[in-house]
Length: 127
Image (cartoon, rainbow, N blue to C red; front, side, top):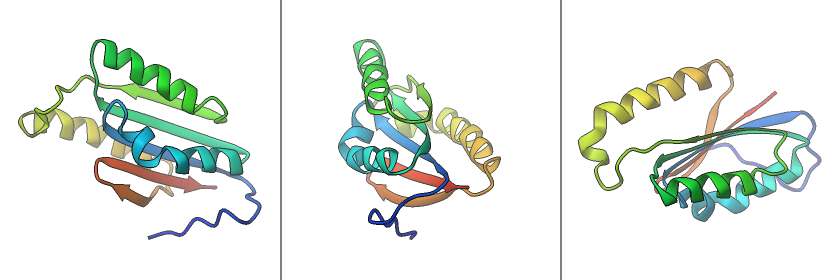
């Protein structure tokens, strides 16, 4: 597990990958950490992925992500519509999506998982 020291100046930039199963999982599970990293690293890029949102929850998830990431240097927000509570039955679709994410993250060449909280995941890359 990588330790993040919030008490020292942060040169360079980081990229953060956040994945939530539902539309408010990232905010509830690790929102404070994401906001703190954004505030302490001058150039923070965030990939924000919500797996299960549709209809009104889809719009809420997108608006919340935009608000949370307002001060991020770069942001990439993806809202998927995998049917909530049916993830075990949608395994192949979700696995294919994760393989796409994995390929994108491997192109960063330094992606690391720094923490998981239930369905929330934070990964980061420092250059």
